[in-house]
Image (tube, rainbow, N blue to C red; front, side, top):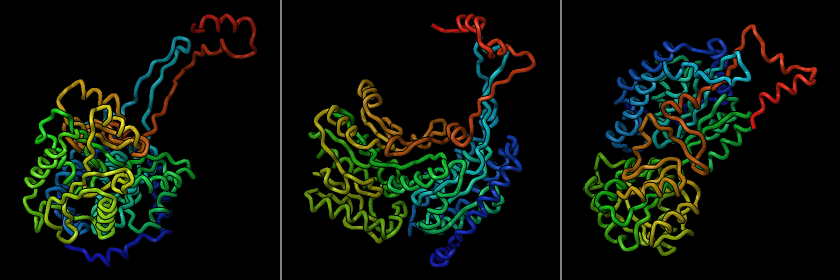
Length: 476
């Protein structure tokens, strides 16, 4: 069913309701501070069944928000990884919840030690518009696995998805366990000021600073997934067809509106022309035509489209060469384009692009490519294309990024057994899989002693006896 957008935009959560929702979740947590594994497994099972049953409704809602979103992209990039993440957590949850045994030093015997993984309490998740399902469900799975209550703030740019997800999650979870908050920027600001036990934000670096500032007032720990300008490096000897095809996949998925999309490509200066042709061929292989192509996703809204067109105007006015790969766009389906002769004074080389524009930067050797990357804020992802293992190791050891793909793009994000997160300007903290469970848990160290107390030997009053004990225990 297609919802009327004007109606959806009137469904903003009243500000006063936020505190009521938060207080209800806080009270529910206090009443059940350590949900057993069976209960958490039931939560995950209900979520998995819901996503399977309602996949078409979610596909339709997301497409409505984008004006057109490829149904297959929603399946591949949102529903499938969400379901895989739930399955992985379900398979490993019992093991994650077990206390971790730790060693006690000889000087402190007799005693035992362990680490207990305790739910934090109430977790807040601020969801971006580009993958509104996956970036809601992923943190939700981690937080529920860890036994928490969860409040999700959906983006005002995806109202149809927000309403649909609120209705669907409300079927299987009471609001004091999981609730969806809708509304404009003022609701988002108020949301970030709640006294959460942990707050996860995915979005722009500029907004992330405001979220972190608001959280700091409550000493709320944060996980920030911010993006940035993720580079791709094409080596001197990699087959250009291989590199171009895989970069094109990463850049065209969701029309480039992906936080780990390749933001620019470093290409050996004598291979630039050949790379342009290989890339053009790869994109046309994916999308022979743009008009009425169900596989080609639109830009989320007019404001974002205007921003991207502004990047083009700014770059071309400063000497960049625009190479459109299609004759023209269609509505908000923006033509995919390459940019040559780019420079640092262009906005497209300063801000995260988040759209179907790909600048190409020539380089002389790997040292120059590494220097170019390392002189800039650390990216969320880095991609290297080349089969020389020595060069691959150089990439891993001589650059910094949140994650790396060697000879691929994007797919590291979908690996449930690896952490996902940024570094520096691209974020802090990580989640997914076991790391998600740990992020939303308090790893509480516990030292256990029984009746016999050898520590009496170091109690005051001090004298010669304590000096003998210290001499025996002191490590040189």
